[in-house]
Amino acid sequence: MENAKADAALYLLTGLLQRLNAERPGMLKEMIAGVESDRAALPDNIENREHVEKIFDEALELLARAN
Image 1 (tube, rainbow, N blue to C red):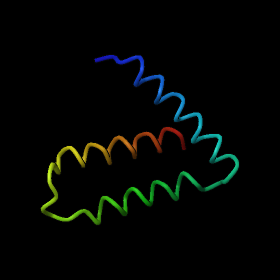
Image 2: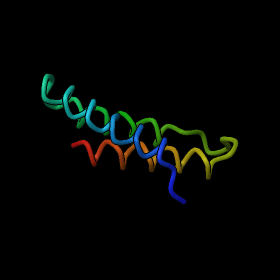
Image 3: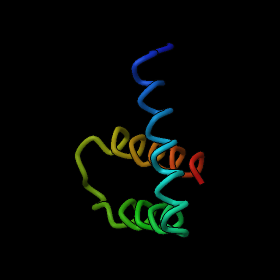
Image 4: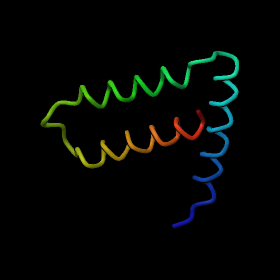
């Protein structure tokens, strides 16, 4: 399903991340490592695990796109 508002926000966020990374090289790689670390630290019995995993997937996809 297409959502112009969400797509616009994603576009702007990607651009912001790229500009920040240009000013601070390596920032995106650090953020990717942080997200992966947070995901690995999730407790086994976390509520709504499937939804939380999808959030991490989307965050990593956004960071990879910006990188």
